[in-house]
Image 1 (cartoon, rainbow, N blue to C red):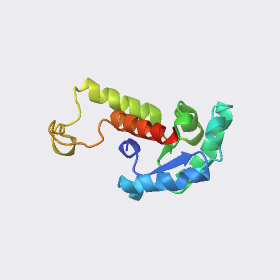
Image 2 (image 1 turned 135 degrees about the vertical axis):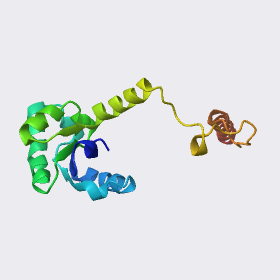
Image 3 (image 1 turned 180 degrees about the vertical axis):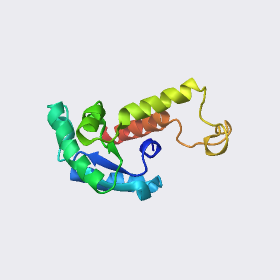
Image 4 (image 1 turned 45 degrees about the vertical axis):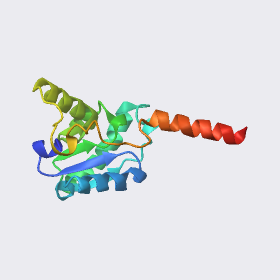
Length: 154
C-alpha cells in the first residue's frame, strides 16, 4: 500500500516463479491489482538472497527495469529476504523501491506513536465472556485427545 503513496503504478520483484501467483492474488484481494504493472521473479531462492547482496540487488534491478518499462514508477521488494536492499535497487533503477519489512515496521511504529490500538467495535469487538466455546482452550481439548489416544494404544 505504501507504494501507491509515492507513485501511481508499481511493480513487485520477488524470489521465484512459485511466489508470483500468491502475490498477484494478494494484490487482487487488497484491491491493488489495478495499480500493479506486474510481478516478476528474479530467480533468487530466499536462502540465497543474502549470499551476495550486490548480485541480489543487480538481479532485482534487471527485473525492476522491466517493470519500469511496463509503466511502474515504484518498485516493491516482494520478499522479506530482500530487506535492506531498497537503496541499492533505487540507485540501480532510478525509481523508489519499497522494502516491505521496513515499511511494515515503520507503519506499526506510526500507529503506536499516534496512540492507536485495534478497534473494539464490529468484528474486532471483545468476545462475550459467556459465549460457549466447546473444546476451548485448545490445550485442554488436545490434552483430552492425547489421553484418549494413549488409552487406545495401551
